[in-house]
Length: 189
Image 1 (cartoon, rainbow, N blue to C red):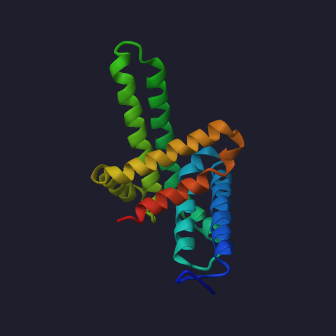
Image 2 (image 1 turned 30 degrees about the vertical axis):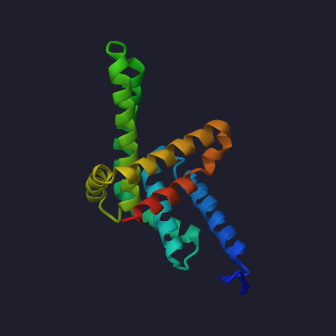
């Protein structure tokens, strides 16, 4: 420990921050690998959120072990959740592509609907323990009740999309910072 200008600073603070950064990137890689069979994207993101939450709480289980255990536990109910989410997303994309009459009004409404649905899905993944329906209901309620927190999650999604657009290889890592953002917003309560 060193003292500078009346403040106590740990000598290894940079190592702690570097460890947090590497854990965040590792979580992104694990979520990306868990999401490769597309129907497991929900359980993979939920397991990433739980692993990041445990890591932030100081639980000493290695991140990859925590992720693997949570991923296996969440697969059963998570696959139907992922399939439903993918089907709904497909319908919104088709609607966005096919909207011709009333395009000036419907297109922004569909984009807003897609943004709200994305926030609800991410919050569901952050809140799930074992029951996906209960987590979905709670996530929908919190999304409506906490518009500021929902806007932060939407901003994190936009930032992730921009990063992937700038450098497509970041698709394998961007889920880590996104899980960290969703967990941090969830802790604001």
